View 1 (spheres, rainbow, N blue to C red):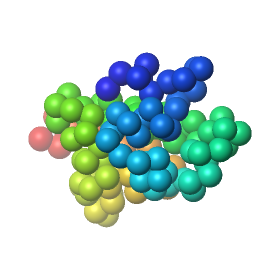
View 2 (tube, rainbow, N blue to C red):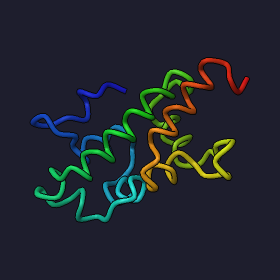
View 3 (cartoon, rainbow, N blue to C red):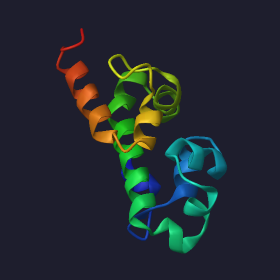
View 4 (cartoon, rainbow, N blue to C red):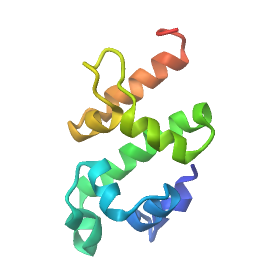
Length: 116
């Protein structure tokens, strides 16, 4: 997934991200663990929290997309695949808990063969 496809005026744009992932803005807000207002109101879209959550999700999707072959398949993994060592929580659930760094470290460890 190209980050440029999700940007508008230097910020991550929820509508562009939702279009890329073939989902709705409402579903995207649930995937980010944010309320609808956070990604529909212009002032809230610009907030640090909203931008951080979108950046975290995009970073995770970018890391796993080569493994799955498409942004859509990476998004399905993000939402539904329980991660070993995280009590069955998905990447999405961990992002909701502000543990995106742990997900990125897990992906790096898998890529390095630690969990092979």
